Image 1 (cartoon, rainbow, N blue to C red):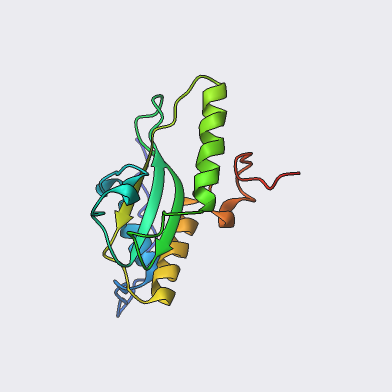
Image 2: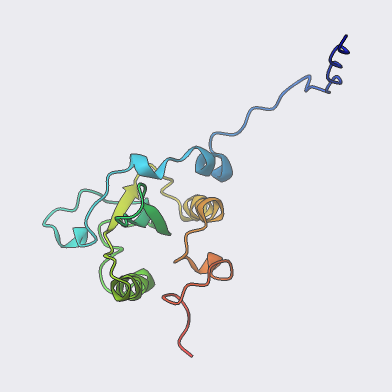
Length: 158
């Protein structure tokens, strides 16, 4: 006759559970769904009227043909979403080198940008949210993750 299963030991619960703070950057990053944002062309800033203005977080992604989901390459923040991508931006250089690296092996990059405009207008909380997203998703083009990823398209020239 088999022995009866042992009951699991009791666990200590919380008498007064503390609800998570919905404004906490780490909590917001945990709940954030990047694929819920609409992809746009990287040349969105050339449009006569860009669809986004003001404070935003933006995500640069690629959708390689071999993958069923996009790759998150970069997370950034701005106080002026309609202006941020104009002119010089390190991520543009990374994307060019990334595209060249893919082309050398017969693959094509399909980069896009997505904007999350429901973010704090104040710089400090917006940057805290950006950093929480970078720590959660570890995008390879962000300088905070360079030690983690060996990415030749973001390395400093030797």
